[in-house]
Image (cartoon, rainbow, N blue to C red; front, side, top):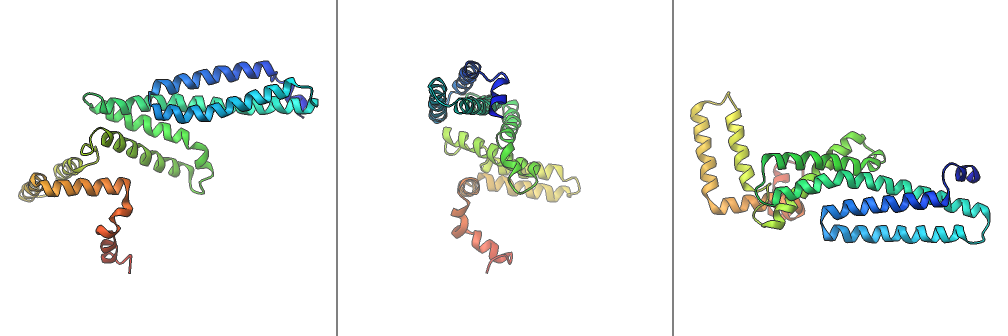
Length: 243
């Protein structure tokens, strides 16, 4: 069987050329992303593959059993298939990283934010495609959930990285959300709407409440366990979900 596989355009030279080409493409894509930490982590991973590939090449070139030589070619083929998958992931990730950078470099526009959400969801759905197949739940539910969660976390991280008080998911978002909900509720009496708008304005003008709202939302996103003793336990007890 290995002999047959080795005959299907799987010569050692063909595999080597394909590996070098794929490695060059994936390095270029990661270089365009511009994150030094990201590039360093990827460099370590791909350096290991380079060492394995060199070992397989030397193993093939040595005077070993022909079946072992064919095994080397087969493993090279599998490595190249993996590298092809990595190229695909990096190609989808690049526009997402660019969209994230656009959100924090200069003035963030509505288009930048929409692009970040759409490209982020597409990237994470591709990245976790195989994980979704073995997740034990419906793959589309798994992908939808993890894509939304990771994109949200990335946006929160990049804004916090620029300014610890500049999270896109902070108190300002909460106040705008309340105003939009009030405007969208056409069944609400005008006097009630005005009263609640004044309450939102009062809440926004209070610096202590604004700060604590941002802290709450930040903990909810990054460290929900910190809320256990800050009200989460009491809330669950009130709801009858904890004793």
